[in-house]
Image (cartoon, rainbow, N blue to C red; front, side):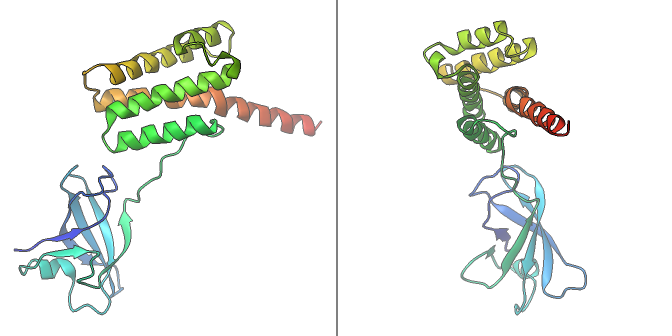
Length: 221
């Protein structure tokens, strides 16, 4: 028995060389040219759908594979076309109004997490906090270490007690990920990523929302 597989990135684990193996197919509604092919990723074991255009082909691809042929889509050896992969791969983003460099590393951290690189994800979260605290205090404090920067921001009332705690957790776990052999679990990385995202929202998104609201209120007076 052959196998039908898809040469695309898995929409779940984002592995570029993952084997997405088909296990079923069905015509899409009354359209004779489109089929929904169900697949399962051999890396993360999650399932999805690939919408395939098989116009001008002699048969549906999964049916052919069950006759002993190995088929890969897309491929120069056949004319099957992939129109859509479900679920869609979602590009990671940072909270609104996050400074550009902090947003860059936060997006990298989310991408690392999606790809299972948990230690790298946590290290990038620490980088996000590092950049964010410099932004909040100004470049004049760039030579002050992160620990003291976080404490100073709290003492000056620029971050709340909870934000202070979150920032220190990210700082310490980021150091641990960089300098120890201890593995970071998916759950731990997800928690650190969540702390970092909330820190950015409280530091940049919420203040900007309040500012715009106040400006709109003042302009109507």
